[in-house]
Length: 116
Image 1 (tube, one colour):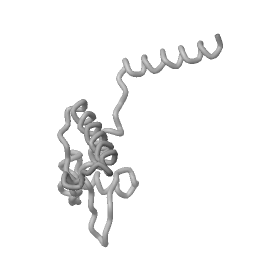
Image 2 (cartoon, one colour; image 1 turned 60 degrees about the vertical axis):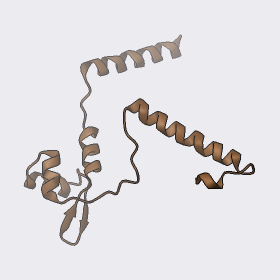
Image 3 (tube, helix red, strand yellow; image 1 turned 180 degrees about the vertical axis):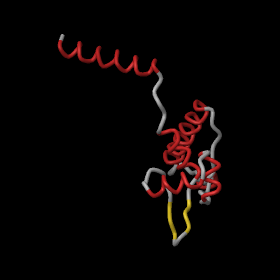
Image 4 (cartoon, helix red, strand yellow; image 1 turned 60 degrees about the horizontal axis):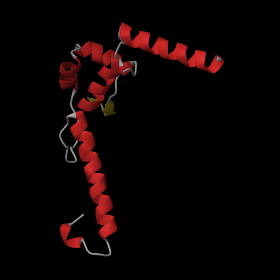
């Protein structure tokens, strides 16, 4: 919203816009991140993908063939996006013993509340 557009008639719209902006900034501050301005996603090749996920090229080709890794194909060329590769890595997180124990306790409490 442009500052020059603010008038008495569109003041509620301007305030709503500011509230949204402040809420987004608050979330970023709480997460400790900096705002990102429409960052373009640039595809990377298999060599860069191998470096990011720390796997050999034949391994990456196998993961692609088995459709286990996010990728794109145009002709004979494979493309990847760094953010998707990092998300793929984090999706394979193993739970710690503490996390498993907490989930088990929460499930047990939930079942005992339903019965009681």
